[in-house]
Length: 221
Image (cartoon, rainbow, N blue to C red):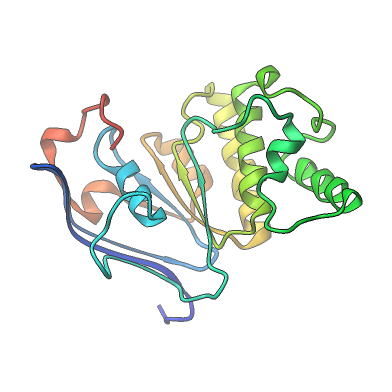
């Protein structure tokens, strides 16, 4: 893989919380426009890895290397969508815009964003009236409006029923491919991983997991 193609390179010697080892010797790389899924059990450290890549969790210098694009940015879609209930769907999405837009441009951008995630006509809807899948589509539209180079997907479909989960995974992959946005998706649902990704990485193949924390579902790791 040439340096021009490479978007992310991760080489973490070890990650601990206090005296507890989460994982060690973790290596992975991601090309521009590529979607990878990291498949592993709950509590093994997948969320911690995403948080380290996003800069939300401390990492040692050079453990996380990102492409040196001047406008490099990262979007993060969490397991539970973080939306503002006092704002309607349209206003939540427009929070993702990097630019100050005129009213007409806002309406045009919003119309395109809603159509992209199959929510046309939802701009005035209250957040509290949305289903789980609709809420995640709003979160995705907001993240995409920021035009990120990379989107991190932290089991964003896990609270949905099986049919909704599969459909949303297909839709998200199509959108990311259309926009040539790379993504790292983590899951413990292998079928979902197969649908959304170009490549699946098994957790115990990319690192040395700490077996004592692999099934600790009480800790967001």
